[in-house]
Image (cartoon, rainbow, N blue to C red; front, side, top):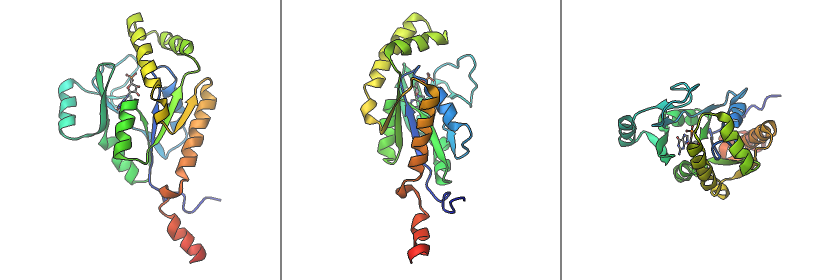
Length: 210
Ligand code: 5GP
């Protein structure tokens, strides 16, 4: 039987971070599939669009002037420099959904996660680790899109990103994407049921015991 008070809750911010190549996008996709209550926040970035990416779907690709304008307009919940480019979470992608009781998935780095935690201490932070650094490098090379120099830079950056693992609420090791995605979904389901997110509970319990 459906829970009559299930929909009466505040939306939550579900943050996924990992070094590049740890499989975060796959886990994010699996988390979003078949769950209409959560959607992805599409960030703005100054990095160039890659083959296979669509503007407005993977990112809002903007130039430096536009990014400056968005910063000046206070349009970001957080923004940071990553790989010498700028990336930011747009308030417009998040606030309305949360107010409507829907959840938002954010694929952002540790810097953005730290900033968000200041703005909203109630966020759920999940870090995804690769099973090994060798496997991480193999996955980065498998993409075939980046030069050796870029990959060496990303491996260095990966170690720096991983060093922030302890700032997260949950840590998953992605040695099997299906298992990892199931765990990520389990975290989401449990966090949705937290007492402090369920605004209808007080009224509901009153109907039970007055
Ligand atoms: P990529 O360029 O490979 O898509 O992303 C590079 C890194 O930037 C990833 O670690 C990703 O999580 C991070 N990133 C993407 N969007 C944002 C954002 O809006 N804010 C922050 N702080 N990091 C982001």
